[in-house]
Length: 245
Ligand SMILES: [Zn+2]
Image (cartoon, rainbow, N blue to C red):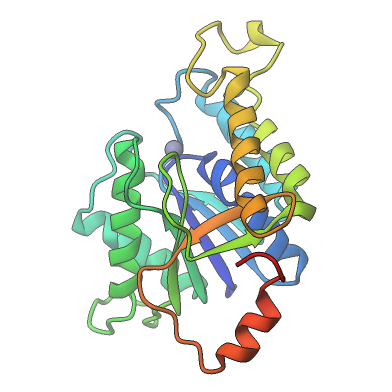
């Protein structure tokens, strides 16, 4: 299957917490969407590998993905190795996405930073014919970075007002990871992400980015390269609203 958009995360719930509103929106617009987690999240403090796998599947259904899978790179040990580059190259060549999404590189969790570098390099290398994986070479049109904890000045913000609720439902599918009154099922260890304030912060941030473009909820993205615009008059009149200069 060929995808329009393929988002890579380090852990099973990374995409839900960052750019799921956009992924769900694109799926509803008719684009083929996929999410690949580089690890199975086996180091997560709460829950078990089986519980996390069930939650991963439940969230994928909510996001209406065409492809949702986890690779077997060890959690807590993502490196930009030749072996890992080949793993990501194989996925890019298999699904031939037009756009690849990955973490913005300046992050707190080391796995997230390495995911950013690994995916960026693999997206480039996937286009080199002489790297032989038995598949046809493919280079995506663009690698786009989504935001984790640290902010950047976005290249663009996507209006996700209509898919924000689905994004929150996808996050809440990870019942063992986030705030949940049924604590006894998952152990009492409170983690950074299991505090009720954590989800509130994710929602508040979506409101903040939404306010920059005059909508209720938004998700920010960064592209490294300057963007080509052939007709600035058409581009900016179609894509901006009066009063949001
Ligand atoms: Zn993560």
